[in-house]
Image (cartoon, rainbow, N blue to C red; front, top):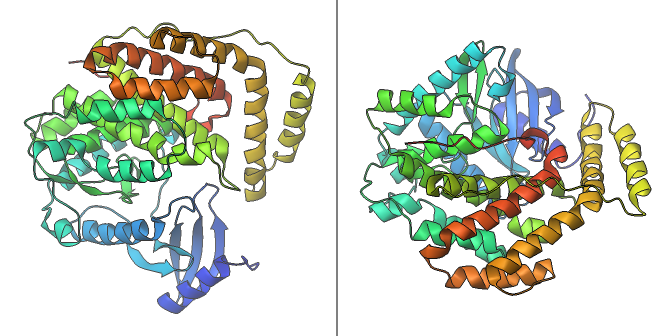
Length: 447
Protein backbone atom coordinates (compact mmCIF):
# COMPACT_ATOMS: atom_id res chain seq x y z
CA UNK A 1 0.00 0.00 0.00
CA UNK A 2 1.47 3.37 -1.02
CA UNK A 3 1.66 6.17 1.53
CA UNK A 4 -1.42 8.40 1.12
CA UNK A 5 0.51 11.53 2.10
CA UNK A 6 -0.59 14.20 4.53
CA UNK A 7 -3.13 14.74 5.97
CA UNK A 8 -4.49 11.31 5.10
CA UNK A 9 -1.66 9.33 6.68
CA UNK A 10 -2.61 11.12 9.89
CA UNK A 11 -6.19 9.90 9.43
CA UNK A 12 -5.10 6.28 8.96
CA UNK A 13 -2.83 6.46 12.01
CA UNK A 14 -5.80 7.73 14.04
CA UNK A 15 -8.06 4.92 12.77
CA UNK A 16 -5.49 2.27 13.65
CA UNK A 17 -5.06 3.71 17.13
CA UNK A 18 -8.76 4.12 17.86
CA UNK A 19 -10.00 0.83 16.39
CA UNK A 20 -7.03 -1.34 17.34
CA UNK A 21 -6.04 -2.81 13.99
CA UNK A 22 -4.38 -1.84 10.72
CA UNK A 23 -5.35 -0.19 7.46
CA UNK A 24 -4.81 -2.76 4.72
CA UNK A 25 -5.82 -0.69 1.70
CA UNK A 26 -7.81 2.40 0.73
CA UNK A 27 -9.42 4.11 -2.23
CA UNK A 28 -10.26 7.79 -2.44
CA UNK A 29 -13.81 8.39 -3.61
CA UNK A 30 -13.94 10.60 -6.70
CA UNK A 31 -16.04 13.49 -5.46
CA UNK A 32 -15.67 17.07 -4.24
CA UNK A 33 -15.95 16.10 -0.55
CA UNK A 34 -12.88 14.31 0.92
CA UNK A 35 -13.94 10.66 1.32
CA UNK A 36 -12.24 7.25 1.43
CA UNK A 37 -13.21 3.60 1.22
CA UNK A 38 -10.91 1.80 3.68
CA UNK A 39 -10.11 -1.90 4.07
CA UNK A 40 -9.26 -2.53 7.72
CA UNK A 41 -8.17 -5.59 9.67
CA UNK A 42 -8.72 -6.15 13.40
CA UNK A 43 -7.76 -9.35 15.21
CA UNK A 44 -7.54 -11.12 11.87
CA UNK A 45 -11.05 -10.09 10.84
CA UNK A 46 -11.69 -7.74 7.87
CA UNK A 47 -13.65 -4.56 8.48
CA UNK A 48 -14.92 -2.31 5.70
CA UNK A 49 -14.88 1.38 6.65
CA UNK A 50 -15.87 4.67 5.09
CA UNK A 51 -14.44 8.10 5.93
CA UNK A 52 -16.69 11.10 5.32
CA UNK A 53 -14.65 14.30 5.61
CA UNK A 54 -15.51 17.92 6.15
CA UNK A 55 -16.34 19.90 3.02
CA UNK A 56 -13.47 22.42 2.85
CA UNK A 57 -15.65 25.35 1.76
CA UNK A 58 -17.93 25.14 4.84
CA UNK A 59 -16.62 27.09 7.83
CA UNK A 60 -18.81 25.19 10.33
CA UNK A 61 -17.89 21.81 8.86
CA UNK A 62 -16.46 20.32 12.05
CA UNK A 63 -19.61 21.11 14.02
CA UNK A 64 -21.79 19.69 11.23
CA UNK A 65 -19.77 16.45 11.20
CA UNK A 66 -20.05 16.03 14.98
CA UNK A 67 -23.79 16.75 14.77
CA UNK A 68 -24.24 14.16 12.04
CA UNK A 69 -22.36 11.50 14.01
CA UNK A 70 -24.62 12.01 17.06
CA UNK A 71 -27.73 11.88 14.87
CA UNK A 72 -26.63 8.65 13.18
CA UNK A 73 -26.02 7.03 16.57
CA UNK A 74 -29.51 8.07 17.73
CA UNK A 75 -31.13 6.78 14.55
CA UNK A 76 -29.34 3.44 14.91
CA UNK A 77 -30.76 3.15 18.44
CA UNK A 78 -34.19 3.98 16.98
CA UNK A 79 -34.06 1.07 14.55
CA UNK A 80 -33.47 3.11 11.39
CA UNK A 81 -30.97 1.48 8.99
CA UNK A 82 -27.90 3.74 9.07
CA UNK A 83 -24.14 3.04 9.05
CA UNK A 84 -22.60 2.24 12.44
CA UNK A 85 -20.31 5.02 13.70
CA UNK A 86 -16.81 4.10 14.89
CA UNK A 87 -15.70 7.62 15.76
CA UNK A 88 -15.02 11.18 14.64
CA UNK A 89 -11.45 11.91 13.64
CA UNK A 90 -10.44 15.39 14.84
CA UNK A 91 -7.75 16.05 12.21
CA UNK A 92 -8.39 15.66 9.33
CA UNK A 93 -11.94 16.09 10.55
CA UNK A 94 -14.51 13.51 9.50
CA UNK A 95 -16.64 10.54 10.50
CA UNK A 96 -15.25 7.01 10.41
CA UNK A 97 -18.21 4.72 9.86
CA UNK A 98 -19.22 1.32 8.62
CA UNK A 99 -19.14 0.99 4.85
CA UNK A 100 -22.67 -0.19 4.20
CA UNK A 101 -23.23 -2.48 1.22
CA UNK A 102 -24.90 -1.30 -1.93
CA UNK A 103 -24.79 1.80 -4.07
CA UNK A 104 -26.47 5.18 -4.25
CA UNK A 105 -28.61 6.67 -7.02
CA UNK A 106 -31.72 4.84 -8.17
CA UNK A 107 -30.85 5.79 -11.75
CA UNK A 108 -28.45 2.83 -11.55
CA UNK A 109 -31.19 0.33 -10.60
CA UNK A 110 -31.20 -2.81 -12.71
CA UNK A 111 -34.85 -2.38 -13.66
CA UNK A 112 -37.84 -0.13 -13.15
CA UNK A 113 -39.27 -2.79 -10.85
CA UNK A 114 -36.20 -2.60 -8.62
CA UNK A 115 -36.31 1.19 -8.57
CA UNK A 116 -39.96 1.17 -7.53
CA UNK A 117 -39.40 -1.48 -4.84
CA UNK A 118 -36.48 0.45 -3.33
CA UNK A 119 -38.33 3.78 -3.40
CA UNK A 120 -41.35 2.12 -1.77
CA UNK A 121 -39.17 0.73 1.01
CA UNK A 122 -37.39 4.05 1.51
CA UNK A 123 -40.78 5.79 1.74
CA UNK A 124 -41.85 3.32 4.43
CA UNK A 125 -38.62 3.92 6.39
CA UNK A 126 -39.15 7.68 6.08
CA UNK A 127 -42.64 7.33 7.57
CA UNK A 128 -41.17 5.28 10.46
CA UNK A 129 -38.43 7.83 11.01
CA UNK A 130 -40.97 10.66 11.15
CA UNK A 131 -42.80 8.69 13.85
CA UNK A 132 -39.77 8.50 16.16
CA UNK A 133 -39.93 10.19 19.55
CA UNK A 134 -38.27 13.58 19.09
CA UNK A 135 -37.21 13.87 22.75
CA UNK A 136 -33.78 12.23 22.25
CA UNK A 137 -33.07 14.62 19.40
CA UNK A 138 -34.15 17.60 21.49
CA UNK A 139 -31.79 16.37 24.22
CA UNK A 140 -28.86 16.52 21.79
CA UNK A 141 -29.68 20.11 20.89
CA UNK A 142 -32.13 20.02 17.98
CA UNK A 143 -34.56 22.89 18.47
CA UNK A 144 -38.30 22.14 18.46
CA UNK A 145 -40.40 24.61 16.41
CA UNK A 146 -42.96 26.28 18.66
CA UNK A 147 -45.49 27.55 16.09
CA UNK A 148 -46.86 26.98 12.60
CA UNK A 149 -44.68 29.83 11.37
CA UNK A 150 -41.53 28.29 12.86
CA UNK A 151 -42.51 24.92 11.33
CA UNK A 152 -42.86 26.52 7.92
CA UNK A 153 -39.70 28.57 8.00
CA UNK A 154 -37.85 25.52 9.38
CA UNK A 155 -34.11 26.29 9.41
CA UNK A 156 -34.33 29.24 6.97
CA UNK A 157 -32.92 31.66 9.57
CA UNK A 158 -29.69 29.66 9.90
CA UNK A 159 -29.20 29.41 6.15
CA UNK A 160 -30.02 33.09 5.69
CA UNK A 161 -27.53 34.13 8.37
CA UNK A 162 -24.73 32.24 6.60
CA UNK A 163 -25.82 33.59 3.22
CA UNK A 164 -25.83 37.21 4.39
CA UNK A 165 -22.48 36.82 6.11
CA UNK A 166 -20.85 35.73 2.84
CA UNK A 167 -22.86 37.84 0.38
CA UNK A 168 -20.63 40.08 -1.75
CA UNK A 169 -22.82 41.10 -4.71
CA UNK A 170 -26.50 41.71 -5.49
CA UNK A 171 -28.54 38.48 -5.58
CA UNK A 172 -31.99 39.61 -6.75
CA UNK A 173 -33.31 36.10 -7.47
CA UNK A 174 -32.39 34.79 -4.02
CA UNK A 175 -33.75 37.90 -2.30
CA UNK A 176 -37.04 37.53 -4.15
CA UNK A 177 -37.48 33.92 -3.09
CA UNK A 178 -36.52 34.63 0.54
CA UNK A 179 -39.09 37.44 0.65
CA UNK A 180 -41.76 35.20 -0.85
CA UNK A 181 -41.03 32.47 1.70
CA UNK A 182 -41.38 34.84 4.65
CA UNK A 183 -44.80 36.06 3.56
CA UNK A 184 -46.18 32.74 2.29
CA UNK A 185 -45.71 30.42 5.30
CA UNK A 186 -48.34 27.63 5.43
CA UNK A 187 -50.87 28.03 8.22
CA UNK A 188 -52.39 25.41 10.50
CA UNK A 189 -49.42 23.02 10.60
CA UNK A 190 -48.49 21.48 13.96
CA UNK A 191 -46.86 18.03 13.62
CA UNK A 192 -43.17 18.00 14.61
CA UNK A 193 -40.93 15.14 13.48
CA UNK A 194 -37.25 14.35 13.18
CA UNK A 195 -36.19 15.33 9.66
CA UNK A 196 -33.30 14.19 7.52
CA UNK A 197 -33.76 17.65 5.94
CA UNK A 198 -31.69 16.59 2.90
CA UNK A 199 -33.88 13.52 2.40
CA UNK A 200 -33.64 10.93 -0.37
CA UNK A 201 -30.06 9.79 0.22
CA UNK A 202 -29.59 6.08 0.78
CA UNK A 203 -27.79 2.96 -0.43
CA UNK A 204 -29.57 -0.05 -1.93
CA UNK A 205 -28.64 -3.55 -3.02
CA UNK A 206 -30.64 -6.35 -4.67
CA UNK A 207 -33.88 -4.38 -4.46
CA UNK A 208 -33.52 -3.46 -0.77
CA UNK A 209 -32.48 -0.31 1.12
CA UNK A 210 -29.28 -1.02 3.06
CA UNK A 211 -28.64 2.34 4.75
CA UNK A 212 -29.89 5.92 4.94
CA UNK A 213 -27.17 8.54 4.49
CA UNK A 214 -26.25 12.17 5.04
CA UNK A 215 -27.81 13.73 8.13
CA UNK A 216 -25.49 16.73 8.23
CA UNK A 217 -28.36 19.25 8.37
CA UNK A 218 -30.92 17.08 10.23
CA UNK A 219 -33.40 19.04 12.33
CA UNK A 220 -36.91 18.94 13.80
CA UNK A 221 -39.81 20.19 11.70
CA UNK A 222 -42.78 19.49 9.46
CA UNK A 223 -42.65 16.06 7.72
CA UNK A 224 -43.63 17.93 4.55
CA UNK A 225 -40.05 19.24 4.47
CA UNK A 226 -38.56 15.79 3.89
CA UNK A 227 -41.13 14.98 1.21
CA UNK A 228 -40.19 18.23 -0.52
CA UNK A 229 -36.48 17.39 -0.30
CA UNK A 230 -37.12 14.23 -2.34
CA UNK A 231 -37.95 16.45 -5.32
CA UNK A 232 -34.58 18.20 -4.96
CA UNK A 233 -32.68 14.91 -4.66
CA UNK A 234 -34.52 13.63 -7.76
CA UNK A 235 -32.76 16.30 -9.84
CA UNK A 236 -29.32 14.73 -9.39
CA UNK A 237 -30.31 11.15 -8.52
CA UNK A 238 -33.61 10.28 -10.26
CA UNK A 239 -35.87 8.54 -7.75
CA UNK A 240 -38.81 7.64 -9.97
CA UNK A 241 -42.46 8.58 -9.52
CA UNK A 242 -42.44 11.14 -6.68
CA UNK A 243 -46.24 11.67 -6.55
CA UNK A 244 -46.68 7.88 -6.18
CA UNK A 245 -44.15 7.90 -3.35
CA UNK A 246 -46.13 10.68 -1.64
CA UNK A 247 -49.35 8.67 -1.95
CA UNK A 248 -47.63 5.68 -0.33
CA UNK A 249 -46.26 7.88 2.45
CA UNK A 250 -49.72 9.29 3.15
CA UNK A 251 -51.11 5.76 3.38
CA UNK A 252 -48.33 4.51 5.67
CA UNK A 253 -48.26 7.56 7.94
CA UNK A 254 -51.95 8.41 7.98
CA UNK A 255 -50.93 12.02 7.31
CA UNK A 256 -52.09 13.50 3.99
CA UNK A 257 -50.17 16.71 3.40
CA UNK A 258 -51.66 19.34 1.05
CA UNK A 259 -49.77 20.01 -2.18
CA UNK A 260 -49.28 23.76 -1.45
CA UNK A 261 -47.47 22.85 1.78
CA UNK A 262 -45.11 20.47 -0.04
CA UNK A 263 -44.62 23.07 -2.77
CA UNK A 264 -43.72 25.70 -0.18
CA UNK A 265 -41.07 23.47 1.38
CA UNK A 266 -39.80 22.54 -2.08
CA UNK A 267 -39.18 26.21 -2.80
CA UNK A 268 -37.58 26.72 0.62
CA UNK A 269 -35.25 23.73 0.47
CA UNK A 270 -34.14 24.22 -3.14
CA UNK A 271 -33.18 27.88 -2.67
CA UNK A 272 -30.79 26.86 0.13
CA UNK A 273 -28.29 25.61 -2.44
CA UNK A 274 -27.96 28.95 -4.28
CA UNK A 275 -27.86 30.71 -0.90
CA UNK A 276 -25.02 28.46 0.23
CA UNK A 277 -22.91 28.65 -2.92
CA UNK A 278 -23.55 32.29 -3.93
CA UNK A 279 -20.41 33.60 -2.15
CA UNK A 280 -18.28 30.85 -3.73
CA UNK A 281 -19.65 31.51 -7.23
CA UNK A 282 -19.00 35.23 -6.80
CA UNK A 283 -15.48 34.79 -5.39
CA UNK A 284 -14.19 31.25 -6.05
CA UNK A 285 -11.50 30.05 -3.67
CA UNK A 286 -8.38 28.42 -5.18
CA UNK A 287 -9.05 24.84 -6.15
CA UNK A 288 -12.85 25.18 -6.16
CA UNK A 289 -14.60 23.14 -8.86
CA UNK A 290 -16.41 26.24 -10.09
CA UNK A 291 -18.52 24.57 -12.80
CA UNK A 292 -19.98 22.17 -10.22
CA UNK A 293 -20.97 25.13 -8.05
CA UNK A 294 -22.32 27.16 -10.97
CA UNK A 295 -24.44 24.14 -11.87
CA UNK A 296 -25.80 23.89 -8.34
CA UNK A 297 -26.40 27.64 -8.23
CA UNK A 298 -28.49 27.80 -11.41
CA UNK A 299 -30.25 24.40 -11.37
CA UNK A 300 -31.41 24.91 -7.80
CA UNK A 301 -32.43 28.48 -8.58
CA UNK A 302 -34.55 27.31 -11.50
CA UNK A 303 -36.25 24.46 -9.59
CA UNK A 304 -38.08 26.57 -6.97
CA UNK A 305 -39.09 29.13 -9.58
CA UNK A 306 -40.62 26.44 -11.78
CA UNK A 307 -42.57 25.13 -8.78
CA UNK A 308 -43.80 28.66 -8.06
CA UNK A 309 -44.70 29.29 -11.70
CA UNK A 310 -46.66 26.03 -11.89
CA UNK A 311 -48.56 26.77 -8.67
CA UNK A 312 -49.35 30.35 -9.77
CA UNK A 313 -50.28 29.34 -13.32
CA UNK A 314 -47.57 31.60 -14.77
CA UNK A 315 -46.70 31.01 -18.44
CA UNK A 316 -42.92 31.27 -18.56
CA UNK A 317 -42.67 30.88 -22.33
CA UNK A 318 -40.63 28.64 -24.58
CA UNK A 319 -36.97 27.83 -23.82
CA UNK A 320 -34.38 30.04 -25.48
CA UNK A 321 -32.13 28.41 -28.09
CA UNK A 322 -29.89 31.11 -29.64
CA UNK A 323 -27.80 30.73 -32.76
CA UNK A 324 -24.05 30.30 -32.26
CA UNK A 325 -21.93 33.34 -33.06
CA UNK A 326 -18.29 32.22 -32.83
CA UNK A 327 -15.64 34.88 -32.24
CA UNK A 328 -12.03 34.97 -33.44
CA UNK A 329 -11.10 32.97 -30.33
CA UNK A 330 -13.32 29.99 -31.22
CA UNK A 331 -10.49 27.89 -32.64
CA UNK A 332 -8.43 28.40 -29.46
CA UNK A 333 -11.35 27.28 -27.32
CA UNK A 334 -11.80 24.18 -29.48
CA UNK A 335 -8.12 23.30 -29.24
CA UNK A 336 -8.06 23.75 -25.46
CA UNK A 337 -11.11 21.53 -24.98
CA UNK A 338 -9.63 18.78 -27.13
CA UNK A 339 -6.27 18.90 -25.33
CA UNK A 340 -7.91 18.66 -21.91
CA UNK A 341 -10.24 15.89 -23.06
CA UNK A 342 -7.24 13.78 -24.04
CA UNK A 343 -5.62 14.40 -20.64
CA UNK A 344 -8.81 13.39 -18.83
CA UNK A 345 -9.33 10.15 -20.72
CA UNK A 346 -8.34 7.83 -17.83
CA UNK A 347 -10.61 6.61 -15.05
CA UNK A 348 -8.51 7.16 -11.92
CA UNK A 349 -8.68 10.03 -9.45
CA UNK A 350 -6.08 12.02 -11.40
CA UNK A 351 -8.30 11.83 -14.49
CA UNK A 352 -11.24 12.98 -12.36
CA UNK A 353 -9.17 15.96 -11.26
CA UNK A 354 -8.25 16.76 -14.88
CA UNK A 355 -11.94 16.71 -15.69
CA UNK A 356 -12.34 19.89 -13.64
CA UNK A 357 -10.48 22.20 -16.07
CA UNK A 358 -12.04 20.29 -18.98
CA UNK A 359 -15.54 21.19 -17.79
CA UNK A 360 -14.44 24.80 -17.34
CA UNK A 361 -13.01 24.96 -20.86
CA UNK A 362 -16.15 23.41 -22.38
CA UNK A 363 -18.33 25.91 -20.54
CA UNK A 364 -16.20 28.88 -21.62
CA UNK A 365 -16.30 27.67 -25.23
CA UNK A 366 -20.09 27.52 -25.09
CA UNK A 367 -20.31 30.91 -23.37
CA UNK A 368 -18.16 32.44 -26.12
CA UNK A 369 -20.57 31.20 -28.81
CA UNK A 370 -23.94 31.70 -27.14
CA UNK A 371 -23.40 33.98 -24.15
CA UNK A 372 -23.77 37.37 -25.86
CA UNK A 373 -27.19 36.50 -27.33
CA UNK A 374 -28.44 35.15 -24.00
CA UNK A 375 -27.16 38.20 -22.13
CA UNK A 376 -28.81 40.56 -24.58
CA UNK A 377 -32.15 38.84 -24.10
CA UNK A 378 -31.76 38.93 -20.32
CA UNK A 379 -30.98 42.66 -20.34
CA UNK A 380 -33.94 43.38 -22.63
CA UNK A 381 -36.32 41.58 -20.25
CA UNK A 382 -34.76 43.29 -17.22
CA UNK A 383 -35.20 46.68 -18.92
CA UNK A 384 -38.87 45.95 -19.57
CA UNK A 385 -39.43 44.84 -15.96
CA UNK A 386 -37.62 47.84 -14.49
CA UNK A 387 -39.16 50.24 -17.02
CA UNK A 388 -35.74 51.73 -17.79
CA UNK A 389 -32.88 50.72 -20.10
CA UNK A 390 -30.03 48.69 -18.61
CA UNK A 391 -27.02 47.63 -20.64
CA UNK A 392 -24.79 45.93 -18.05
CA UNK A 393 -25.51 42.74 -16.08
CA UNK A 394 -24.07 44.06 -12.81
CA UNK A 395 -26.17 47.24 -13.04
CA UNK A 396 -29.22 45.12 -13.84
CA UNK A 397 -28.68 42.95 -10.76
CA UNK A 398 -28.25 45.99 -8.52
CA UNK A 399 -31.44 47.59 -9.81
CA UNK A 400 -33.36 44.31 -9.71
CA UNK A 401 -32.45 43.68 -6.07
CA UNK A 402 -33.70 47.16 -5.15
CA UNK A 403 -36.86 46.52 -7.18
CA UNK A 404 -37.48 43.18 -5.41
CA UNK A 405 -37.11 44.78 -1.98
CA UNK A 406 -39.84 47.32 -2.80
CA UNK A 407 -42.20 45.08 -4.77
CA UNK A 408 -45.36 43.69 -3.19
CA UNK A 409 -47.15 40.36 -3.81
CA UNK A 410 -48.90 41.87 -6.85
CA UNK A 411 -45.57 41.69 -8.72
CA UNK A 412 -44.91 38.02 -7.87
CA UNK A 413 -46.12 36.58 -11.18
CA UNK A 414 -43.97 38.81 -13.39
CA UNK A 415 -40.92 38.36 -11.13
CA UNK A 416 -41.35 34.59 -11.16
CA UNK A 417 -41.54 34.69 -14.94
CA UNK A 418 -38.46 36.91 -15.28
CA UNK A 419 -36.25 34.95 -12.88
CA UNK A 420 -37.42 31.62 -14.26
CA UNK A 421 -36.47 32.68 -17.79
CA UNK A 422 -33.12 34.04 -16.55
CA UNK A 423 -32.34 30.75 -14.80
CA UNK A 424 -33.36 28.69 -17.83
CA UNK A 425 -30.89 30.63 -19.97
CA UNK A 426 -28.02 29.91 -17.60
CA UNK A 427 -28.96 26.25 -17.14
CA UNK A 428 -29.12 25.84 -20.93
CA UNK A 429 -25.65 27.37 -21.22
CA UNK A 430 -24.27 24.99 -18.58
CA UNK A 431 -26.22 21.90 -19.58
CA UNK A 432 -23.49 19.97 -21.48
CA UNK A 433 -21.15 20.21 -18.46
CA UNK A 434 -23.73 19.64 -15.71
CA UNK A 435 -22.85 15.93 -15.44
CA UNK A 436 -25.45 14.36 -13.11
CA UNK A 437 -27.70 17.44 -13.45
CA UNK A 438 -27.74 17.46 -17.25
CA UNK A 439 -31.29 17.61 -18.58
CA UNK A 440 -32.85 17.41 -15.12
CA UNK A 441 -36.30 18.84 -14.39
CA UNK A 442 -38.14 19.08 -11.10
CA UNK A 443 -41.30 16.98 -10.82
CA UNK A 444 -44.36 19.23 -10.56
CA UNK A 445 -47.47 18.46 -8.51
CA UNK A 446 -51.14 19.00 -9.23
CA UNK A 447 -53.99 19.16 -6.76
